[in-house]
Image (tube, rainbow, N blue to C red; front, side):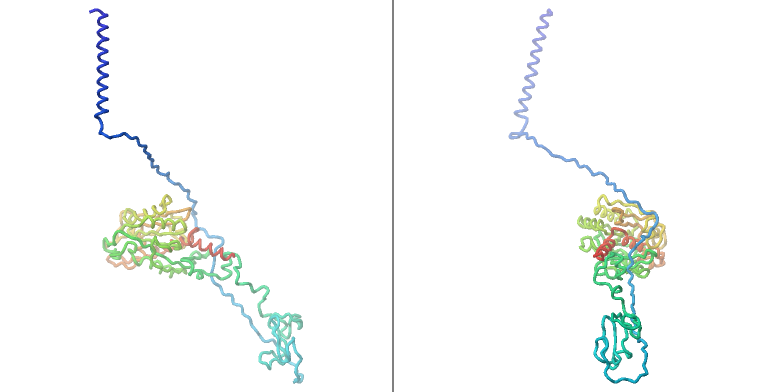
Length: 466
């Protein structure tokens, strides 16, 4: 076979291959078209809108500097009532007695009065020589006992035998209009003798601190305990916790808050009254300056609306003290209480350790840090330490103001139960320092700038300026 024949043969078979492959592909395509799908099926294009969830960045808010040393304001409010007594003494002036014979004839009118009568004009009391017969006159003639604008006598201004002495007030300068506000704001409160007692029917708390003596505090506080739902009733885990048996978590140590109020009333002039419980859905929540929340082992149950109300309360001047009686951060109460604060405040719920130099530790009694509590002493027929100890308390700050204080030291047991512990449980124990620390927390919450009590003080000052 020649080369030309081979080329012809190759072209022939190459053409056959192309035709065969084309027929195969065509048959496959026709088969798919006619037999590949169900009858009536249509291909429809749908536009899908999808959104990528992007978490917001971590909010960073610079905290204002905290004072290392305690300080006292140069000026402060002192509403202590004072009684200024003004005593007006009416004494009889010595009148010269004449030895001349008595003239029984009617005397000429004196100071515009009739014979035998005295007269009162412009504050001066005068009498004629015969006025004593009427029962109120002064023998010896006209005697000035007040400010007189008549001319005569040795003093020149209403001076009779009494030489014009003045025992009455100076109406031009001593008497002021007591119906007006008087101006001056807080200083006018001192001048007008306004005390914190005047506001007990308006507010739930008011406090005054002597700038020269921080231990001298006075005022009043209606304190409320937070009532919340929990997963179960409490049960004592061992000897020494019997007080919690059958109690709801929000009131695991019933004597805790009454003991603190009793100590405050005995140690200071701050009158602390327990008004009862309050819930996060209460309308009165916005006016309460201080809320105390305790718990033990049960978890806290709350709704979204309650968390929202708590957030609004804390952002607008409120304060809450969360006291973990279990003294254990991995416990159910501590975890759920912190989560409630996170749901209430969002990105503002940053838990910070309170430094030992914070003013809270020296606002009333001096502390070098939080005192010991249930975190160091547990009772199981003997005194023993637990594994986890938290030598600090934590707080949440918003714009430099402390809105929440969280303790894992079990101060509620120390306040309400330590003094009544039987010897089998290691007691009783002295709880003085723990009560003093609780009072420090109360005083600091009521005196810090931006709180509800501070807002009430500003409102009163504005009213006094009108």
